[in-house]
Length: 315
Image 1 (cartoon, rainbow, N blue to C red):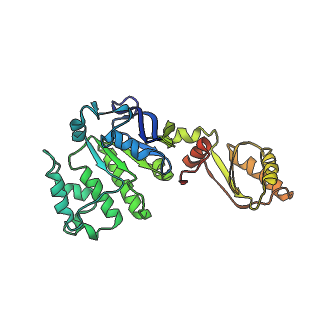
Image 2 (cartoon, helix red, strand yellow; image 1 turned 90 degrees about the vertical axis):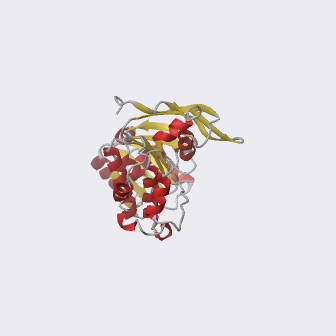
Image 3 (cartoon, rainbow, N blue to C red; image 1 turned 120 degrees about the horizontal axis):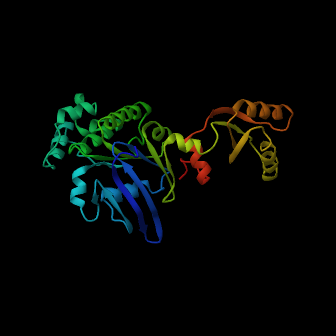
């Protein structure tokens, strides 16, 4: 991707609300044809960052360039080359799907044909139905369809699958991947770790208004220097016992790191079998009495916790 042209530049972006700094000197570049993910918990600054790049919100510092246009100096040009699906889209509930598509198409000097776009969004059979009768997933697909009417170079999707059931979420994933196949550049914000891993070529991890890491999903997980995780619970530990347990766990063979969240312990290792055998031997010796033991591969959630001490799902 890095050999592709740069389509978006976020340069030292800052946004303040009174004394609260929502976005703190955010820097990144997005390349043509990639799906670029902004991943972080609610309140991390993802939406505010996207709105500054879209030209919907004026930065208090820094600048954003989209397809060569400065969002503050050339906003009209920026609007011509982007499509935006907002986190919450208010639609005219009494219009039919086809009517609202035609209305939005009339806003542009040039727009793509509506019927093929409805087919791409799997909404052909709903074209005569009123918006108010659509499911949550269908409304999200309609919102994305409306963002594509001007055939944009860059598409912004802000938490597109929040609140959707797993089937509707997967349908949207398929649509996003098809847009990528057509060469569209997509900026996607999400707090779903699996979604970011499946869809994104690169991920910008954000927390408390700052970029904490930026790389491919694989490289971010590799930064843990551990392929696997052993997770279990040790309920009802006081602080003294917890310190004793941690000392014991640091002696487990091949363990490279330990995270503790309340009564949940996660051990990171490259040699899962060796670590697991040693852990079980310690348990059999009566030193540890754990529950809910499971093994898994390391994830982006682990990376985020390692870097911030917080979960992606924490407010």
